Amino acid sequence: MIKKVLIVDDEPFIRNFLKDALKKLNKETDTAINGQVAIEKIQKENFDLIITDMKMPKKNGIDVLKIAKQKNPNVIVIIISAFAKIQNATQALNLGAFTYLIKPFSFDTIDAVIKKAEEHKNLILENSFLKKEISNHNASDIIAKSPYMQNLLNNIDKIAKSSSSVFISGESGTGKEVVAKLIHQRSNRANNPFIKVNLAAISATLIESEFFGHEKGAFTGADTSKKGRFELANKGTLLLDEITEIPINLQAKLLRAIQEKEFEKVGSTTPINVDIRFISITNQDIISAIKNNQFREDLFYRLNVIPIHILPLKDRIEDILPLANYFLFKFSKENHKSLKMLTPKAIKKLETYFWPGNVRELANIIERAVVMDRSKIIDVDHIFLDTPLNKSQNKENVLDQQFIDKKLSDIEKTLILKTLAKHNYNRSKTAKILGISTRTLRNKLNLYNFKKI
Image (tube, rainbow, N blue to C red; front, side, top):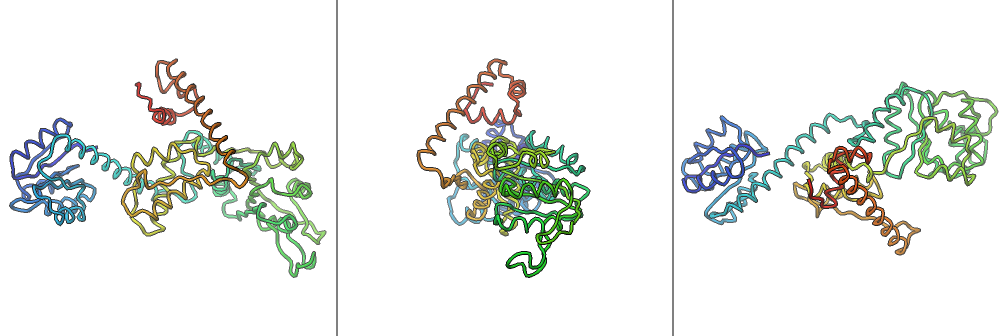
């Protein structure tokens, strides 16, 4: 928020005009009759905004700009001039001026520029907060502001301290593996191995060997003895990624190994005892897999001692901006670029998108904006949202899905607006009844262009 403004001009008419205009905008003002007086005031006081003439006796506008930026790089400086010289404007903008205005100008012009400046000031403050927040952020932590994820994070310490098996479900790209790693890192096994096995990436014929290892000569190509993931994960955590991909004929052996805490290598009869914490991940409908005899029910219950479900990103709107800011910082640093800022319109675009690719898609979109655009801000036009078709989909499927989504959105809108009206437009009460946060409700109402207070 811009509160205090310094007006610098050697013409009394301009000083008074600007003073009156800013007073109407509820800004506190101070004036200086030349650059030297302005510099003395800048060194003694703090100003949010400085409006200075380009040409003045005793230090000009460029001198004022340089001193102001030396004292406070985030101060907003507007240069005004009676001369529309491109060279002067370019010099001022290169030195950090916010804009360059040509005299004479109207109150409407000043009003519009001040609003833009305030928006820019807010972005600077958010950017400063972001740098501080991210610098204090542990890479192993999860960035989450939504009530749902906050509640999940509050429970992770309890979950981590146990040795019970955890079953994490959720759409692809929601952060299931990040949660799994966090559970391990906060457990008493943190100093021991965290071993991951992606069952979708291993041939069905090799899964048993990958799990339990094999002895030399156990099968063709087994030229040496090899430890399996079970043995490597001893005293630590074994992450079973895409657990529904394990062949049904191996599930009984996996169940026995988990229950008995022992197994034999392929080609051996000597049991190996292990102490492992199991975390399983899936983006598939495990209940359907059980009903279709693709996954053993007894194995599921052994793995599903502590269930965790991660909501899709579209259902936790409060997480979108913090995550986007985190990725801005991350990819700016990785690509050796200055940290960019999201404009309010860009934020709205992100928060109203349906995110079929979830957090992974958000990361990709932010990385693209950081790499491809040279400006200091990321505006709505810099964010390219795309939804590639699934191989099994055709145009009719997509149109059908869009129709269904539209119908569901209409039902949601009707429910929200009726509930709001029923409770005299009390947003806090409405949000509580609907089971959502007040911020989610506010974002939905903004999406509907709802104006009633």
